[in-house]
Length: 343
Length: 291
Image (tube, rainbow over all chains, first blue to last red; front, side, top):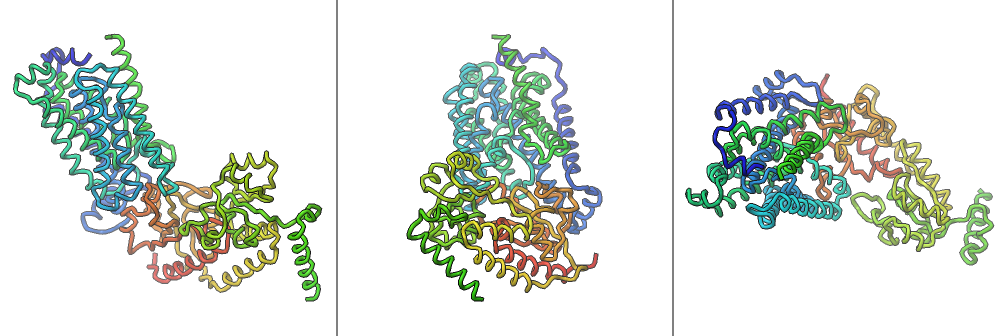
Protein backbone atom coordinates (compact mmCIF):
# COMPACT_ATOMS: atom_id res chain seq x y z
CA UNK A 1 0.00 0.00 0.00
CA UNK A 2 1.03 3.52 -0.63
CA UNK A 3 1.94 4.78 2.86
CA UNK A 4 4.22 1.81 3.30
CA UNK A 5 5.87 2.47 -0.02
CA UNK A 6 6.10 6.17 0.67
CA UNK A 7 7.83 5.63 3.98
CA UNK A 8 10.90 4.60 2.06
CA UNK A 9 11.32 7.35 -0.47
CA UNK A 10 14.96 6.35 -0.93
CA UNK A 11 16.00 5.57 -4.51
CA UNK A 12 14.32 2.18 -4.66
CA UNK A 13 13.43 2.74 -8.27
CA UNK A 14 14.90 4.73 -11.08
CA UNK A 15 13.22 8.06 -11.68
CA UNK A 16 14.04 10.51 -14.48
CA UNK A 17 15.44 13.93 -13.59
CA UNK A 18 12.52 16.01 -12.34
CA UNK A 19 13.14 18.95 -14.65
CA UNK A 20 13.30 16.67 -17.69
CA UNK A 21 10.03 15.04 -16.67
CA UNK A 22 8.34 18.44 -16.32
CA UNK A 23 9.63 19.60 -19.70
CA UNK A 24 8.50 16.40 -21.44
CA UNK A 25 5.03 16.55 -19.91
CA UNK A 26 4.69 20.25 -20.73
CA UNK A 27 5.64 19.53 -24.34
CA UNK A 28 3.07 16.74 -24.44
CA UNK A 29 0.39 19.09 -23.16
CA UNK A 30 1.41 21.73 -25.70
CA UNK A 31 1.28 19.25 -28.59
CA UNK A 32 -2.14 17.96 -27.50
CA UNK A 33 -3.34 21.54 -27.07
CA UNK A 34 -2.36 22.30 -30.67
CA UNK A 35 -4.05 19.11 -31.90
CA UNK A 36 -7.15 20.10 -29.96
CA UNK A 37 -7.17 23.47 -31.75
CA UNK A 38 -6.81 21.71 -35.08
CA UNK A 39 -9.60 19.22 -34.35
CA UNK A 40 -13.17 20.18 -35.05
CA UNK A 41 -16.26 19.69 -37.11
CA UNK A 42 -15.69 22.28 -39.76
CA UNK A 43 -12.85 22.17 -42.28
CA UNK A 44 -10.57 24.97 -41.16
CA UNK A 45 -7.34 26.28 -42.67
CA UNK A 46 -5.43 26.79 -39.44
CA UNK A 47 -2.60 28.84 -40.94
CA UNK A 48 -5.06 31.10 -42.76
CA UNK A 49 -7.16 31.50 -39.60
CA UNK A 50 -4.07 32.41 -37.55
CA UNK A 51 -2.96 35.03 -40.06
CA UNK A 52 -6.52 36.42 -40.11
CA UNK A 53 -6.40 36.74 -36.34
CA UNK A 54 -2.98 38.39 -36.50
CA UNK A 55 -4.26 40.89 -39.08
CA UNK A 56 -7.46 41.50 -37.20
CA UNK A 57 -9.65 40.13 -40.01
CA UNK A 58 -12.89 38.78 -38.61
CA UNK A 59 -13.18 35.89 -41.04
CA UNK A 60 -15.24 32.82 -40.26
CA UNK A 61 -12.09 30.77 -39.74
CA UNK A 62 -10.79 33.28 -37.20
CA UNK A 63 -14.15 33.28 -35.41
CA UNK A 64 -14.30 29.50 -35.18
CA UNK A 65 -10.73 29.33 -33.90
CA UNK A 66 -11.04 32.09 -31.30
CA UNK A 67 -14.64 31.74 -30.13
CA UNK A 68 -15.16 27.98 -30.34
CA UNK A 69 -11.92 26.01 -30.46
CA UNK A 70 -9.74 28.16 -28.22
CA UNK A 71 -12.07 28.03 -25.17
CA UNK A 72 -12.40 24.29 -25.63
CA UNK A 73 -8.66 23.67 -25.79
CA UNK A 74 -7.94 26.05 -22.89
CA UNK A 75 -10.63 24.55 -20.69
CA UNK A 76 -9.45 21.02 -21.49
CA UNK A 77 -6.00 22.06 -20.37
CA UNK A 78 -7.01 23.93 -17.21
CA UNK A 79 -9.74 21.57 -16.06
CA UNK A 80 -7.49 18.54 -16.64
CA UNK A 81 -4.69 20.21 -14.72
CA UNK A 82 -7.06 20.96 -11.83
CA UNK A 83 -8.29 17.38 -11.68
CA UNK A 84 -4.80 15.88 -11.90
CA UNK A 85 -3.28 18.11 -9.25
CA UNK A 86 -6.16 17.71 -6.81
CA UNK A 87 -6.06 13.93 -7.27
CA UNK A 88 -2.41 13.97 -6.26
CA UNK A 89 -3.09 16.41 -3.40
CA UNK A 90 -5.94 14.39 -1.93
CA UNK A 91 -4.06 11.13 -2.21
CA UNK A 92 -1.22 12.78 -0.31
CA UNK A 93 -3.45 14.34 2.33
CA UNK A 94 -5.58 11.29 3.00
CA UNK A 95 -2.61 8.98 2.37
CA UNK A 96 -4.94 6.82 0.40
CA UNK A 97 -4.48 5.77 -3.23
CA UNK A 98 -8.22 5.84 -3.98
CA UNK A 99 -8.73 9.48 -3.05
CA UNK A 100 -9.85 11.34 -6.19
CA UNK A 101 -12.33 14.24 -6.52
CA UNK A 102 -14.70 12.18 -8.71
CA UNK A 103 -14.73 8.97 -6.65
CA UNK A 104 -15.03 10.56 -3.23
CA UNK A 105 -17.81 12.96 -4.16
CA UNK A 106 -16.05 16.34 -4.30
CA UNK A 107 -16.84 16.81 -8.00
CA UNK A 108 -20.41 15.64 -7.50
CA UNK A 109 -20.97 18.14 -4.72
CA UNK A 110 -19.37 20.88 -6.82
CA UNK A 111 -21.79 20.03 -9.63
CA UNK A 112 -24.71 20.39 -7.23
CA UNK A 113 -23.40 23.77 -6.06
CA UNK A 114 -23.11 24.99 -9.64
CA UNK A 115 -26.54 23.59 -10.62
CA UNK A 116 -28.22 25.31 -7.68
CA UNK A 117 -26.72 28.64 -8.78
CA UNK A 118 -27.14 28.26 -12.53
CA UNK A 119 -30.70 27.02 -12.94
CA UNK A 120 -32.29 29.41 -10.52
CA UNK A 121 -30.93 32.46 -12.24
CA UNK A 122 -28.36 33.41 -9.60
CA UNK A 123 -25.53 33.14 -12.15
CA UNK A 124 -26.92 36.28 -13.75
CA UNK A 125 -26.74 38.20 -10.47
CA UNK A 126 -22.95 38.49 -10.56
CA UNK A 127 -20.49 36.71 -12.81
CA UNK A 128 -18.54 34.86 -10.13
CA UNK A 129 -21.68 33.30 -8.64
CA UNK A 130 -21.42 30.17 -10.82
CA UNK A 131 -17.84 29.14 -9.94
CA UNK A 132 -18.41 30.20 -6.33
CA UNK A 133 -21.36 27.82 -6.17
CA UNK A 134 -19.16 25.01 -7.42
CA UNK A 135 -16.43 25.94 -4.96
CA UNK A 136 -18.87 26.01 -2.05
CA UNK A 137 -20.13 22.54 -3.00
CA UNK A 138 -16.61 21.16 -3.35
CA UNK A 139 -15.50 22.71 -0.05
CA UNK A 140 -18.49 21.31 1.82
CA UNK A 141 -17.81 17.83 0.45
CA UNK A 142 -14.08 17.98 1.22
CA UNK A 143 -14.69 19.11 4.80
CA UNK A 144 -17.39 16.48 5.28
CA UNK A 145 -15.14 13.82 3.83
CA UNK A 146 -12.26 14.77 6.04
CA UNK A 147 -14.57 14.68 9.04
CA UNK A 148 -15.87 11.24 8.10
CA UNK A 149 -12.69 9.62 6.90
CA UNK A 150 -9.88 11.88 8.03
CA UNK A 151 -6.27 11.03 8.73
CA UNK A 152 -5.40 7.40 8.84
CA UNK A 153 -8.94 6.10 8.38
CA UNK A 154 -9.12 2.94 6.32
CA UNK A 155 -9.80 2.81 2.60
CA UNK A 156 -13.19 1.31 3.36
CA UNK A 157 -14.32 4.33 5.40
CA UNK A 158 -13.07 6.71 2.72
CA UNK A 159 -14.84 4.92 -0.10
CA UNK A 160 -18.07 4.59 1.89
CA UNK A 161 -17.97 8.28 2.73
CA UNK A 162 -17.36 8.99 -0.95
CA UNK A 163 -20.27 6.80 -2.04
CA UNK A 164 -22.54 8.54 0.46
CA UNK A 165 -21.50 12.05 -0.62
CA UNK A 166 -21.68 11.12 -4.30
CA UNK A 167 -25.17 9.67 -4.17
CA UNK A 168 -26.46 12.49 -1.98
CA UNK A 169 -25.01 15.11 -4.31
CA UNK A 170 -26.38 13.34 -7.40
CA UNK A 171 -29.84 13.14 -5.81
CA UNK A 172 -29.79 16.83 -4.93
CA UNK A 173 -28.60 17.70 -8.44
CA UNK A 174 -31.45 15.70 -9.95
CA UNK A 175 -33.90 17.37 -7.58
CA UNK A 176 -32.65 20.85 -8.45
CA UNK A 177 -32.87 20.11 -12.18
CA UNK A 178 -36.40 18.76 -11.76
CA UNK A 179 -37.45 21.92 -9.95
CA UNK A 180 -35.97 24.17 -12.61
CA UNK A 181 -38.55 26.20 -14.51
CA UNK A 182 -36.78 25.44 -17.81
CA UNK A 183 -38.12 22.27 -19.50
CA UNK A 184 -34.68 21.43 -20.91
CA UNK A 185 -33.04 21.32 -17.49
CA UNK A 186 -34.05 17.76 -16.62
CA UNK A 187 -32.15 16.23 -19.52
CA UNK A 188 -29.03 18.19 -18.61
CA UNK A 189 -28.20 15.96 -15.69
CA UNK A 190 -26.05 14.06 -18.20
CA UNK A 191 -23.82 17.08 -18.59
CA UNK A 192 -23.39 17.56 -14.85
CA UNK A 193 -22.70 13.89 -14.15
CA UNK A 194 -20.48 13.16 -17.16
CA UNK A 195 -19.03 16.49 -18.19
CA UNK A 196 -18.35 18.04 -21.58
CA UNK A 197 -16.31 20.83 -23.14
CA UNK A 198 -18.65 21.27 -26.12
CA UNK A 199 -19.65 24.82 -27.06
CA UNK A 200 -18.21 26.46 -23.95
CA UNK A 201 -17.19 30.07 -24.42
CA UNK A 202 -14.19 32.27 -23.61
CA UNK A 203 -15.89 34.32 -20.88
CA UNK A 204 -16.21 31.11 -18.87
CA UNK A 205 -12.47 30.51 -19.23
CA UNK A 206 -11.54 33.94 -17.92
CA UNK A 207 -14.12 33.56 -15.17
CA UNK A 208 -12.64 30.41 -13.68
CA UNK A 209 -8.95 30.73 -14.51
CA UNK A 210 -8.00 33.08 -11.62
CA UNK A 211 -9.81 30.85 -9.13
CA UNK A 212 -8.11 27.76 -10.50
CA UNK A 213 -4.70 29.46 -10.38
CA UNK A 214 -5.29 30.29 -6.74
CA UNK A 215 -6.20 26.67 -6.04
CA UNK A 216 -3.17 25.32 -7.92
CA UNK A 217 -0.93 27.71 -5.99
CA UNK A 218 -2.27 26.53 -2.63
CA UNK A 219 -1.79 22.90 -3.63
CA UNK A 220 1.74 23.30 -4.99
CA UNK A 221 2.82 25.29 -1.91
CA UNK A 222 1.74 22.35 0.24
CA UNK A 223 4.26 20.07 -1.52
CA UNK A 224 7.07 20.10 1.06
CA UNK A 225 4.60 19.46 3.89
CA UNK A 226 3.09 16.54 1.94
CA UNK A 227 6.58 15.06 1.50
CA UNK A 228 7.17 15.37 5.24
CA UNK A 229 3.80 13.83 5.97
CA UNK A 230 4.92 10.57 4.36
CA UNK A 231 7.25 10.17 7.36
CA UNK A 232 4.29 10.19 9.71
CA UNK A 233 2.36 13.01 11.35
CA UNK A 234 4.62 13.25 14.42
CA UNK A 235 7.76 13.47 12.34
CA UNK A 236 6.19 16.05 10.05
CA UNK A 237 5.23 18.15 13.07
CA UNK A 238 8.68 17.82 14.60
CA UNK A 239 10.10 19.05 11.29
CA UNK A 240 8.09 22.21 11.84
CA UNK A 241 5.09 21.66 9.56
CA UNK A 242 1.74 22.85 10.84
CA UNK A 243 -0.61 20.00 9.94
CA UNK A 244 -3.81 21.93 10.64
CA UNK A 245 -2.65 24.59 8.22
CA UNK A 246 -1.68 21.97 5.65
CA UNK A 247 -5.15 20.42 5.79
CA UNK A 248 -6.84 23.78 5.41
CA UNK A 249 -4.56 24.67 2.53
CA UNK A 250 -5.24 21.40 0.69
CA UNK A 251 -8.99 21.55 1.30
CA UNK A 252 -9.14 25.16 0.07
CA UNK A 253 -6.92 24.43 -2.93
CA UNK A 254 -9.01 21.38 -3.90
CA UNK A 255 -12.28 23.27 -3.51
CA UNK A 256 -11.03 26.21 -5.61
CA UNK A 257 -9.58 24.06 -8.40
CA UNK A 258 -12.27 21.37 -8.64
CA UNK A 259 -15.20 23.62 -7.76
CA UNK A 260 -14.51 26.15 -10.49
CA UNK A 261 -13.63 23.42 -13.02
CA UNK A 262 -16.84 21.47 -12.46
CA UNK A 263 -18.93 24.65 -12.55
CA UNK A 264 -18.13 25.11 -16.25
CA UNK A 265 -17.57 21.57 -17.55
CA UNK A 266 -19.52 19.23 -15.27
CA UNK A 267 -18.02 16.23 -13.50
CA UNK A 268 -15.16 14.53 -15.32
CA UNK A 269 -14.20 11.49 -13.28
CA UNK A 270 -11.07 9.34 -13.03
CA UNK A 271 -8.56 11.90 -14.36
CA UNK A 272 -7.40 12.59 -10.79
CA UNK A 273 -7.14 8.86 -10.11
CA UNK A 274 -5.29 7.66 -13.19
CA UNK A 275 -2.64 10.35 -13.48
CA UNK A 276 -1.12 10.29 -9.98
CA UNK A 277 -0.85 6.51 -10.20
CA UNK A 278 0.74 6.44 -13.62
CA UNK A 279 3.24 9.16 -12.73
CA UNK A 280 4.05 8.34 -9.10
CA UNK A 281 6.96 5.99 -9.95
CA UNK A 282 8.46 8.74 -12.12
CA UNK A 283 8.80 11.11 -9.15
CA UNK A 284 10.20 8.43 -6.84
CA UNK A 285 6.90 8.33 -4.91
CA UNK A 286 7.31 11.85 -3.55
CA UNK A 287 3.82 13.32 -3.14
CA UNK A 288 5.12 16.90 -3.19
CA UNK A 289 6.75 16.49 -6.58
CA UNK A 290 3.80 14.50 -7.85
CA UNK A 291 1.49 17.55 -7.65
CA UNK A 292 2.74 19.52 -10.66
CA UNK A 293 3.55 16.39 -12.65
CA UNK A 294 0.11 14.94 -12.09
CA UNK A 295 -1.51 18.24 -13.03
CA UNK A 296 0.30 18.22 -16.37
CA UNK A 297 -0.67 14.58 -16.87
CA UNK A 298 -4.30 15.41 -16.12
CA UNK A 299 -4.24 18.22 -18.69
CA UNK A 300 -2.81 15.83 -21.29
CA UNK A 301 -5.39 13.12 -20.56
CA UNK A 302 -8.34 15.53 -20.65
CA UNK A 303 -7.16 17.13 -23.89
CA UNK A 304 -6.65 13.70 -25.44
CA UNK A 305 -10.09 12.53 -24.34
CA UNK A 306 -11.69 15.70 -25.72
CA UNK A 307 -9.88 15.23 -29.03
CA UNK A 308 -11.16 11.64 -28.96
CA UNK A 309 -14.84 12.54 -28.59
CA UNK A 310 -14.57 14.81 -31.61
CA UNK A 311 -12.73 12.27 -33.78
CA UNK A 312 -14.95 9.30 -32.91
CA UNK A 313 -17.76 9.07 -35.46
CA UNK A 314 -20.49 9.23 -32.83
CA UNK A 315 -22.94 12.12 -33.08
CA UNK A 316 -23.95 13.90 -30.98
CA UNK A 317 -20.49 13.60 -29.48
CA UNK A 318 -19.90 11.51 -26.38
CA UNK A 319 -19.70 13.17 -23.01
CA UNK A 320 -16.12 13.51 -21.82
CA UNK A 321 -16.78 11.54 -18.64
CA UNK A 322 -17.72 8.51 -20.73
CA UNK A 323 -14.27 8.41 -22.28
CA UNK A 324 -12.35 9.08 -19.05
CA UNK A 325 -14.43 6.40 -17.30
CA UNK A 326 -13.65 3.85 -20.03
CA UNK A 327 -9.97 4.58 -19.45
CA UNK A 328 -10.21 5.03 -15.69
CA UNK A 329 -12.59 2.34 -14.50
CA UNK A 330 -10.34 -0.63 -15.41
CA UNK A 331 -7.60 1.26 -13.61
CA UNK A 332 -9.75 1.44 -10.51
CA UNK A 333 -10.49 -2.30 -10.74
CA UNK A 334 -6.76 -2.98 -10.93
CA UNK A 335 -6.12 -0.81 -7.87
CA UNK A 336 -8.84 -2.51 -5.85
CA UNK A 337 -7.43 -5.89 -6.83
CA UNK A 338 -3.95 -4.86 -5.66
CA UNK A 339 -5.32 -3.45 -2.39
CA UNK A 340 -7.07 -6.79 -1.78
CA UNK A 341 -3.86 -8.70 -2.42
CA UNK A 342 -2.00 -6.52 0.06
CA UNK A 343 -4.72 -6.71 2.71
CA UNK B 1 -78.58 30.70 -49.06
CA UNK B 2 -81.86 29.46 -47.70
CA UNK B 3 -80.59 25.89 -47.42
CA UNK B 4 -77.67 26.97 -45.24
CA UNK B 5 -80.08 28.90 -43.06
CA UNK B 6 -82.33 25.91 -42.69
CA UNK B 7 -79.33 23.69 -41.99
CA UNK B 8 -78.00 26.21 -39.49
CA UNK B 9 -81.33 26.24 -37.75
CA UNK B 10 -81.44 22.44 -37.68
CA UNK B 11 -77.95 22.28 -36.19
CA UNK B 12 -78.94 24.87 -33.63
CA UNK B 13 -82.13 22.99 -32.78
CA UNK B 14 -80.25 19.70 -32.50
CA UNK B 15 -77.70 21.39 -30.25
CA UNK B 16 -80.47 22.80 -28.08
CA UNK B 17 -82.10 19.39 -27.87
CA UNK B 18 -78.81 17.78 -26.88
CA UNK B 19 -78.29 20.41 -24.22
CA UNK B 20 -81.65 19.76 -22.63
CA UNK B 21 -81.49 16.01 -23.01
CA UNK B 22 -77.97 14.61 -23.45
CA UNK B 23 -79.20 11.01 -23.72
CA UNK B 24 -80.67 11.85 -27.14
CA UNK B 25 -77.14 12.31 -28.47
CA UNK B 26 -76.31 8.64 -28.02
CA UNK B 27 -77.90 7.68 -31.32
CA UNK B 28 -76.34 10.57 -33.24
CA UNK B 29 -73.47 9.42 -35.52
CA UNK B 30 -71.20 12.31 -34.46
CA UNK B 31 -72.45 13.96 -31.30
CA UNK B 32 -70.64 17.14 -30.30
CA UNK B 33 -68.39 16.26 -27.36
CA UNK B 34 -69.28 18.24 -24.24
CA UNK B 35 -66.27 17.43 -22.09
CA UNK B 36 -63.19 17.75 -24.28
CA UNK B 37 -59.82 17.26 -22.57
CA UNK B 38 -56.51 18.13 -24.23
CA UNK B 39 -53.22 16.52 -23.19
CA UNK B 40 -50.96 18.43 -25.51
CA UNK B 41 -49.96 22.08 -25.90
CA UNK B 42 -50.66 22.05 -29.64
CA UNK B 43 -54.05 20.41 -29.14
CA UNK B 44 -54.76 22.98 -26.41
CA UNK B 45 -54.46 25.81 -28.90
CA UNK B 46 -56.70 24.20 -31.52
CA UNK B 47 -59.33 23.16 -28.99
CA UNK B 48 -59.38 26.57 -27.32
CA UNK B 49 -59.60 28.38 -30.65
CA UNK B 50 -62.22 26.11 -32.20
CA UNK B 51 -64.49 24.55 -29.56
CA UNK B 52 -67.14 26.35 -27.54
CA UNK B 53 -65.51 27.22 -24.20
CA UNK B 54 -68.23 25.44 -22.20
CA UNK B 55 -67.39 22.20 -24.05
CA UNK B 56 -63.74 22.22 -22.97
CA UNK B 57 -63.30 20.38 -19.68
CA UNK B 58 -59.57 20.83 -19.35
CA UNK B 59 -56.36 21.80 -21.16
CA UNK B 60 -52.71 21.37 -20.12
CA UNK B 61 -51.02 23.64 -17.64
CA UNK B 62 -48.57 24.63 -20.40
CA UNK B 63 -51.27 26.53 -22.26
CA UNK B 64 -51.30 29.23 -19.54
CA UNK B 65 -47.62 30.05 -20.06
CA UNK B 66 -47.52 33.20 -22.19
CA UNK B 67 -44.01 32.39 -23.39
CA UNK B 68 -45.00 29.15 -25.10
CA UNK B 69 -48.71 29.47 -25.69
CA UNK B 70 -50.65 31.68 -28.11
CA UNK B 71 -53.89 31.17 -26.22
CA UNK B 72 -52.88 31.97 -22.63
CA UNK B 73 -55.77 34.46 -22.26
CA UNK B 74 -58.42 31.91 -23.23
CA UNK B 75 -56.72 29.17 -21.18
CA UNK B 76 -56.89 31.34 -18.05
CA UNK B 77 -60.63 30.63 -17.86
CA UNK B 78 -60.39 26.85 -18.44
CA UNK B 79 -59.42 24.21 -15.85
CA UNK B 80 -55.93 22.78 -16.38
CA UNK B 81 -54.46 19.27 -16.14
CA UNK B 82 -50.92 17.89 -15.82
CA UNK B 83 -51.50 14.95 -18.13
CA UNK B 84 -51.93 12.32 -15.42
CA UNK B 85 -54.32 9.46 -16.08
CA UNK B 86 -56.12 9.76 -12.75
CA UNK B 87 -57.00 13.41 -13.10
CA UNK B 88 -58.10 12.89 -16.69
CA UNK B 89 -60.41 9.96 -15.85
CA UNK B 90 -61.89 11.94 -12.96
CA UNK B 91 -62.89 14.65 -15.46
CA UNK B 92 -65.16 12.06 -17.21
CA UNK B 93 -64.15 13.28 -20.68
CA UNK B 94 -66.13 12.30 -23.78
CA UNK B 95 -63.15 13.16 -25.98
CA UNK B 96 -59.44 13.26 -25.13
CA UNK B 97 -57.01 14.76 -27.63
CA UNK B 98 -53.40 13.73 -27.12
CA UNK B 99 -50.15 14.49 -28.94
CA UNK B 100 -48.36 11.79 -30.94
CA UNK B 101 -45.42 11.60 -28.52
CA UNK B 102 -46.57 13.04 -25.21
CA UNK B 103 -47.66 11.27 -22.02
CA UNK B 104 -47.59 7.69 -23.45
CA UNK B 105 -48.42 6.07 -20.11
CA UNK B 106 -51.49 8.26 -19.67
CA UNK B 107 -52.63 7.62 -23.24
CA UNK B 108 -52.29 3.84 -22.78
CA UNK B 109 -54.26 4.02 -19.55
CA UNK B 110 -57.05 6.07 -21.15
CA UNK B 111 -57.28 3.52 -23.98
CA UNK B 112 -57.74 0.74 -21.43
CA UNK B 113 -60.38 2.79 -19.65
CA UNK B 114 -62.30 3.01 -22.93
CA UNK B 115 -62.25 6.80 -23.11
CA UNK B 116 -62.66 8.18 -26.66
CA UNK B 117 -59.19 9.24 -27.71
CA UNK B 118 -57.89 11.18 -30.66
CA UNK B 119 -54.16 11.43 -31.38
CA UNK B 120 -52.99 14.65 -33.02
CA UNK B 121 -49.99 14.11 -35.31
CA UNK B 122 -46.98 16.36 -35.82
CA UNK B 123 -47.63 18.84 -38.63
CA UNK B 124 -44.77 18.96 -41.12
CA UNK B 125 -46.11 21.51 -43.57
CA UNK B 126 -48.66 24.25 -43.97
CA UNK B 127 -50.95 21.72 -45.63
CA UNK B 128 -50.74 19.59 -42.47
CA UNK B 129 -51.63 22.67 -40.43
CA UNK B 130 -54.77 23.29 -42.50
CA UNK B 131 -55.73 19.63 -42.20
CA UNK B 132 -55.24 19.63 -38.45
CA UNK B 133 -57.44 22.68 -38.03
CA UNK B 134 -60.18 20.94 -40.06
CA UNK B 135 -59.63 17.70 -38.14
CA UNK B 136 -60.08 19.26 -34.71
CA UNK B 137 -62.89 21.57 -35.86
CA UNK B 138 -64.86 18.54 -37.11
CA UNK B 139 -64.16 16.60 -33.91
CA UNK B 140 -65.49 19.35 -31.67
CA UNK B 141 -68.46 19.95 -33.97
CA UNK B 142 -67.31 23.36 -35.24
CA UNK B 143 -66.72 22.70 -38.92
CA UNK B 144 -67.60 26.26 -39.95
CA UNK B 145 -65.35 27.81 -37.36
CA UNK B 146 -62.47 25.70 -38.68
CA UNK B 147 -63.13 26.90 -42.23
CA UNK B 148 -63.27 30.49 -40.98
CA UNK B 149 -59.88 30.17 -39.24
CA UNK B 150 -58.33 28.66 -42.38
CA UNK B 151 -59.91 31.38 -44.48
CA UNK B 152 -58.34 34.07 -42.27
CA UNK B 153 -54.95 32.36 -42.56
CA UNK B 154 -55.17 32.15 -46.33
CA UNK B 155 -56.13 35.81 -46.64
CA UNK B 156 -53.15 36.88 -44.52
CA UNK B 157 -50.83 34.59 -46.48
CA UNK B 158 -52.04 36.00 -49.78
CA UNK B 159 -50.93 39.43 -48.54
CA UNK B 160 -47.35 38.18 -48.04
CA UNK B 161 -45.46 39.19 -51.15
CA UNK B 162 -43.02 36.51 -52.16
CA UNK B 163 -39.56 37.61 -53.27
CA UNK B 164 -38.07 37.11 -56.70
CA UNK B 165 -36.64 33.62 -57.05
CA UNK B 166 -33.11 34.99 -57.40
CA UNK B 167 -32.93 36.69 -53.99
CA UNK B 168 -33.40 33.81 -51.60
CA UNK B 169 -31.11 34.44 -48.60
CA UNK B 170 -29.57 31.35 -47.01
CA UNK B 171 -30.84 30.72 -43.51
CA UNK B 172 -30.09 28.27 -40.72
CA UNK B 173 -32.07 27.38 -37.63
CA UNK B 174 -30.49 27.08 -34.19
CA UNK B 175 -32.66 25.58 -31.49
CA UNK B 176 -31.80 24.83 -27.86
CA UNK B 177 -29.21 22.03 -27.63
CA UNK B 178 -27.94 22.91 -31.10
CA UNK B 179 -30.89 21.27 -32.84
CA UNK B 180 -31.62 22.40 -36.35
CA UNK B 181 -34.63 21.89 -38.60
CA UNK B 182 -34.25 20.48 -42.11
CA UNK B 183 -36.51 19.37 -44.96
CA UNK B 184 -39.76 17.78 -43.97
CA UNK B 185 -40.45 20.02 -40.99
CA UNK B 186 -43.03 22.72 -40.53
CA UNK B 187 -40.35 25.33 -39.87
CA UNK B 188 -38.62 24.43 -43.14
CA UNK B 189 -41.91 24.95 -44.97
CA UNK B 190 -42.38 28.28 -43.17
CA UNK B 191 -38.86 29.37 -44.18
CA UNK B 192 -39.39 28.35 -47.81
CA UNK B 193 -42.68 30.23 -47.98
CA UNK B 194 -40.99 33.29 -46.49
CA UNK B 195 -38.44 33.21 -49.29
CA UNK B 196 -35.49 31.74 -47.41
CA UNK B 197 -33.28 28.79 -48.36
CA UNK B 198 -32.66 26.43 -45.47
CA UNK B 199 -28.94 25.55 -45.37
CA UNK B 200 -29.74 22.42 -43.36
CA UNK B 201 -30.50 20.84 -46.75
CA UNK B 202 -26.72 20.88 -47.36
CA UNK B 203 -26.00 19.16 -44.04
CA UNK B 204 -27.65 15.81 -44.82
CA UNK B 205 -29.99 16.06 -41.85
CA UNK B 206 -33.36 14.36 -41.94
CA UNK B 207 -36.01 16.58 -40.33
CA UNK B 208 -34.33 17.34 -36.98
CA UNK B 209 -30.70 16.99 -36.01
CA UNK B 210 -28.10 18.25 -33.59
CA UNK B 211 -25.32 20.25 -35.21
CA UNK B 212 -22.17 21.66 -33.60
CA UNK B 213 -21.98 25.45 -33.43
CA UNK B 214 -18.84 25.20 -35.55
CA UNK B 215 -20.86 23.80 -38.45
CA UNK B 216 -23.52 26.49 -38.15
CA UNK B 217 -20.86 29.23 -38.18
CA UNK B 218 -18.89 27.86 -41.12
CA UNK B 219 -22.06 27.38 -43.17
CA UNK B 220 -22.04 31.20 -43.20
CA UNK B 221 -25.81 31.72 -43.42
CA UNK B 222 -27.24 35.17 -44.22
CA UNK B 223 -29.90 34.66 -41.59
CA UNK B 224 -29.64 32.69 -38.37
CA UNK B 225 -33.00 31.89 -36.80
CA UNK B 226 -32.73 31.38 -33.06
CA UNK B 227 -36.01 29.64 -32.86
CA UNK B 228 -36.68 29.89 -29.15
CA UNK B 229 -37.04 32.74 -26.80
CA UNK B 230 -33.60 33.40 -25.33
CA UNK B 231 -34.81 35.07 -22.18
CA UNK B 232 -36.48 32.11 -20.47
CA UNK B 233 -35.23 30.57 -17.26
CA UNK B 234 -31.59 29.44 -17.60
CA UNK B 235 -30.48 26.05 -18.93
CA UNK B 236 -27.42 24.89 -20.81
CA UNK B 237 -29.67 24.03 -23.75
CA UNK B 238 -30.73 27.66 -24.17
CA UNK B 239 -27.33 29.01 -23.06
CA UNK B 240 -26.00 28.02 -26.48
CA UNK B 241 -28.28 30.66 -28.04
CA UNK B 242 -26.27 33.30 -26.18
CA UNK B 243 -22.85 31.99 -27.18
CA UNK B 244 -20.47 34.90 -27.89
CA UNK B 245 -19.65 33.49 -31.33
CA UNK B 246 -23.19 34.39 -32.41
CA UNK B 247 -22.72 38.02 -31.38
CA UNK B 248 -19.38 37.98 -33.19
CA UNK B 249 -21.22 37.03 -36.39
CA UNK B 250 -22.91 40.43 -36.39
CA UNK B 251 -22.27 42.20 -39.66
CA UNK B 252 -22.30 39.05 -41.76
CA UNK B 253 -25.27 37.14 -40.37
CA UNK B 254 -28.64 38.52 -39.36
CA UNK B 255 -29.80 37.03 -36.04
CA UNK B 256 -33.54 36.58 -35.70
CA UNK B 257 -35.25 35.39 -32.56
CA UNK B 258 -38.40 33.52 -33.57
CA UNK B 259 -40.38 32.28 -30.56
CA UNK B 260 -41.21 28.58 -30.67
CA UNK B 261 -44.89 29.28 -30.08
CA UNK B 262 -45.10 30.63 -33.64
CA UNK B 263 -43.99 27.41 -35.35
CA UNK B 264 -44.05 24.51 -32.85
CA UNK B 265 -47.72 23.80 -33.38
CA UNK B 266 -50.07 23.60 -36.28
CA UNK B 267 -52.16 26.69 -35.71
CA UNK B 268 -52.86 30.09 -37.23
CA UNK B 269 -49.72 31.47 -35.55
CA UNK B 270 -47.60 30.01 -38.38
CA UNK B 271 -48.83 32.90 -40.49
CA UNK B 272 -47.13 35.34 -38.15
CA UNK B 273 -43.94 33.27 -38.39
CA UNK B 274 -44.06 33.51 -42.19
CA UNK B 275 -44.75 37.24 -42.07
CA UNK B 276 -41.85 37.89 -39.68
CA UNK B 277 -39.39 35.79 -41.68
CA UNK B 278 -40.58 37.37 -44.92
CA UNK B 279 -39.56 40.80 -43.60
CA UNK B 280 -36.18 39.40 -42.56
CA UNK B 281 -35.72 37.77 -45.96
CA UNK B 282 -36.48 41.04 -47.71
CA UNK B 283 -33.93 42.92 -45.58
CA UNK B 284 -31.26 40.25 -45.93
CA UNK B 285 -31.90 39.83 -49.65
CA UNK B 286 -31.71 43.57 -50.26
CA UNK B 287 -28.64 44.20 -48.12
CA UNK B 288 -26.81 41.13 -49.36
CA UNK B 289 -23.31 41.71 -50.62
CA UNK B 290 -22.46 40.08 -53.95
CA UNK B 291 -20.99 36.63 -53.45
